[in-house]
Length: 178
Image (tube, rainbow, N blue to C red; front, side, top):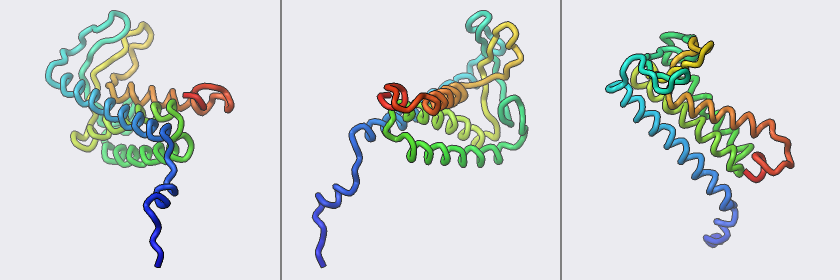
């Protein structure tokens, strides 16, 4: 029985330097988003005063907890939301792997999205609710629910993904060069 040489085995696995950079970018942004979210939530739980203005007519702190999803839907369904979050996370990573693992832009987007999802998923699993502490104070937008750093990362990731999906193929950025 002939054994293959190690070099020929390695030649089957073709990973470009760009792909490695994309893997690293996705992982680094995901970890950074989770770390920033965890740090700010812990800080908010201990130190955040109620209703403190950070930037007048723009942003304030208002510590709340949310046992549901956005806009107060599915209150008390943390386990269902956690299960849905895991499934969505897997679907997003499969999408990235099949469609854009060579795109720096999409890798950054998916890294932020996954980091945000994991940050809130961690809260749902460990606490049964999500810690929210930021609130928009824009005139006419005071009804907007409180949010957290994980929400910001996830929304940024979704917006970047939408840009990537709608950017014309063959253009320089963000689909090809980014």
